[in-house]
Length: 553
Image (cartoon, rainbow, N blue to C red; front, side, top):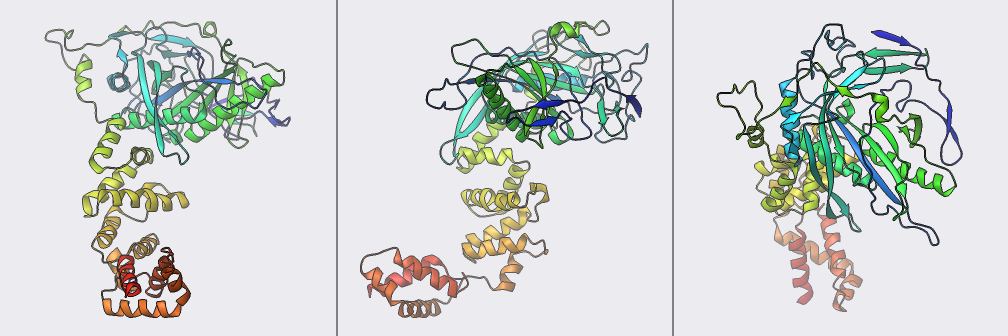
């Protein structure tokens, strides 16, 4: 491990809303990873984020995002070093990554193809010629003292990302929205700085230094945390569908910087702040909404907003000042002298006799694009007749769509019934116990067998829920075995059921009287009593039919 003692910064106290003082510290406690970078987002006005109280001026929030996605590649952007999460510190560092004199960058073809594929999926214009630049700043986890990026002419520009925001009283209506994409650029990642406050030292791990990143810069078309979170989740799904990035935020493969400002509609835009290195969709939404409200409170109390970089403290739920915001001049951008322009081709411009291994064909990559999430949702709606919001849920929960499709393959039940069980019962149990789909004790095969038993009227809906509960206990039994052991099959003896209905009517004359007086809902009580007596083994429809026949006679 390289050791860097003393960061040249002193911890201080910063006042946040509410008048309380909190210590400025890293978002994750004793260790943190600070990601530095320059914002390239220009701000534009949008609609208000909250309804003003009487007598107050309304505020409009403007939010732009810079999203850094780690490219799925076996090696780094400009070196042959392996890329692997949680490897021993400084075990995946080449001479170039450590910036030893005389080493030169060699561009990774896979990273370029990933950038082109992502740009096409996001409706971008792919520049046939793009340039690399050096972005200078000194930090211990950046050995060269500069980052190779694409500031002047990036690989893709002028795209768009469509996402859906839930609305309505029950959040059951999906409203499509679009955010413009300014550019997508290739760049190097930095290493990790692990700050140890107890020993007043910083440890450096260069395993991540030089890993290829896609920086996706969104125009400031967003206005609140929910929109930002939904847009990032949609981008995450697209990257995963393409295979260009695993986009696992827990492993730092997708990180977001948010640029936020507020102003009164019709007035000049406000001073913006940048909240750095948000690595959770939930924290992204919280950080943006907190920062919007902090700026409004600050301005309404006569204060001013500083153009600064802030971090989000997930434990305190607030943003904290880190440093003043750098400007373009601070980075001293210059052309990268060791890399020629990156030239791409399409079918019309491809040189005759060109070696396919030496050129990248944009049209060829376009033909390999997989089904994107928006197309998958449309297919689910058309193929299975499900609601659009249900298709969003299936895709948003990791592994849920695959689980659903496996159940569909193995069951005779109607797709709508499968959808209901997967989204309500199955997902409800997962949420209740905070489990991922991959951690579920109920397999697609087990749920398919259970639905077949329900579909064949072997068991009732209530009994099916009992069986599901037993399956969740991980006892290794099949639905059929559980039904047999607990004697949950539907009653087939109509005569015994008629006798039971007759007994219930005699035992509850007042309910029968209510029915005869014209209260049709009273029959539900009798149905419930009969089902309870049969331990939910009787078919409610048959019970109702028998009761109605006896009442009319």
